[in-house]
Length: 100
Image (tube, rainbow, N blue to C red):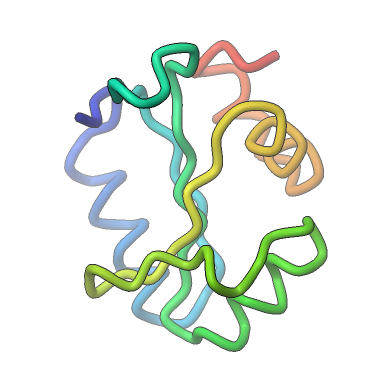
């Protein structure tokens, strides 16, 4: 279950993903498999090659791309999530979700 973002933020993320941009969106998240994590970042892009190459620089494997929806993305949690948000300079998301 995702929460902590509004419809316009999600719509903007989807628009950017569909346009072939690398787009990151962070939200609060509850999942029984990962009770130690409270947030999740989706790093999406409709250009699968571009997304895979972007992920490689962070040690993400191509096979980890979620293809179940119209918005291909990596799910980022924990220390990898923080590392990527720092390196991508997403200060607003880091602060807003208490990751720094």
